[in-house]
Amino acid sequence: MTPFECYKTYIAMKQHFCKDSYDYQRYGNRFPNMHIQQFYERKDRFFFEKMSREFSDKDVESFFLSNFVSDKDPEKVFMAEMIKGGRSTFVEWKKRNQALLYNFKEEANKLFEGKNINDVFDCSNGHPPILKDYLGGRISIETLVICDKILRFRNDFDSKLSPYVWKTVSEKIKNYEPFININVFDYKKTLKELVL
View (cartoon, rainbow, N blue to C red):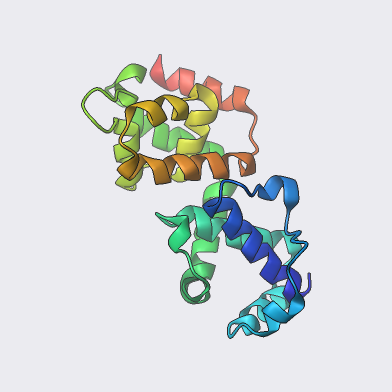
């Protein structure tokens, strides 16, 4: 990957997480009206040059993905932050994803402990326990996305919860979901074992 392609991947991933009109899975880093001159005018281009030498094409994509999904608000993720702490975020994200089923089982076990499935998704008293656990850092974004893949609660929450807190989380689930490639049947079976 060239430094310019690395830069385009960053822009495309940011668009994917911040704009409804852009789908990274569909378009990748193809921008017809982006010119290399824009890249050479950036003060941080050295970072893209370094990344293109040190990372594989897949790792460049994963690096940006990990940084956008790990932040509370992807719109507020800027290159300066990635330069400072992006590598540690990327390493943590890789660890979570390499042990995805194990982490899901552990986090879901804590989430459903002493509760039935309806209680975890109950919005009648404000934010449901699953959202509180995510915001409190007790479950990961991956567990939240997997639960939505299994139970499809996001659209229900969209109509019931105040957009002030939920909208950002809902958008992140929607945008991250295509990157979580799992056998839903295995995770559904794991979840059934925990709640029954």
